[in-house]
Image 1 (cartoon, one colour):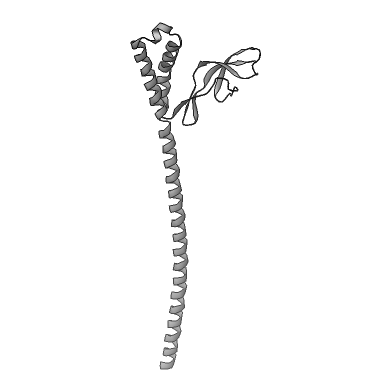
Image 2 (cartoon, rainbow, N blue to C red):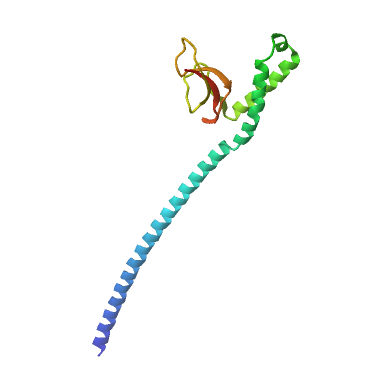
Length: 169
């Protein structure tokens, strides 16, 4: 009887050991699954965070767009006034002071990533220019900007306002 009990105890111990090993293997598989899932989630979160930072950076880059668009008409007025100045008024100190304000505004805009779109003698580009009128000038290449009617501006490489131009037919 003692022998049977000892054998039974030994078999029971072996069964428990097998069960524990099976349970341990199961726990290790679950651990690996959970770890892999956590690592994927962490990587997804880090990617999301990076994309959000880039998106926020882009948004901040163009946050002042509306303010700048509201300033451009005043700058256009300065340009028009300067264009129509007589020779004697160009030497007037008060006029020079006003034109200095225009230069300060342009300088501030340049620091904000604003740049003028080149037009004179450039080939017409519908992404940068808005054709207001077509004129025919002998000796000029077709599709070339012959006159700028309103300056165009870019902000950080994007068109803020296209230049309004006359082009050659």
